[in-house]
Image 1 (cartoon, one colour):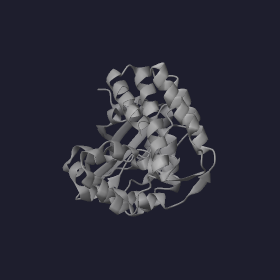
Image 2: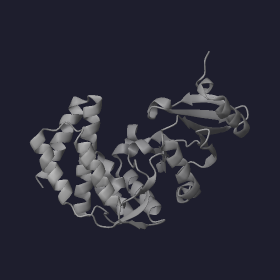
Image 3: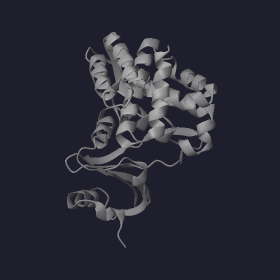
Image 4: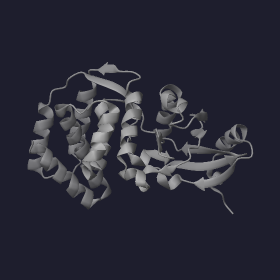
Length: 281
């Protein structure tokens, strides 16, 4: 019977045999990741590991390796994130320790304010490691938003209103911090009430408020207690109103362009509804 391990390239298989001699497949979790990514839980002796490989052009592995090598220390040292075992970017393969626990997104943890408080505490620790000022961050994002607007399938008058708003925005110097990039319950596991972090493949330096975007759009709208608990754990609210508005508009334009490209009519309609509400404010 063909195993998911048989999909590895000869180079990847040789590296895996060096790093984890005799490793056996436990679970194939590739379906939980984007196209072009293989994610396998492996057993080597009594220990469990997660191996990921990606095809060329999928940048998530590069970002995850960068996060492991320079920024995940506060979490790994506290047992709140996996540890890097080995990685080879040329061969497009990474091995890390496997974290026990239930996915937060499909467990009662998704409805527990204590979990959101822990999420705030962990994120604050991550963000506090460094900060840099970037004069080009906002102008570059505006350029991308305008390019996406041309592909978003919006009616001409509405698109022109959006274009006028985006081009009128100020472009202040932005403070960037280490950002997880996908901070929401799908990136957390919970073991005995303790929150742990997985999937750092969207790591980059961004404004702190970026890591609240998915929570704000999804989990905080379900129950404002989650938002209060998160902010208590984080220690402040990084969502400066004008910068937050710009982020929301850019995100909605990007989603609209994606929905138009992929034929997701329902998502396209929701994106236009979101943009209409944002323009009204």
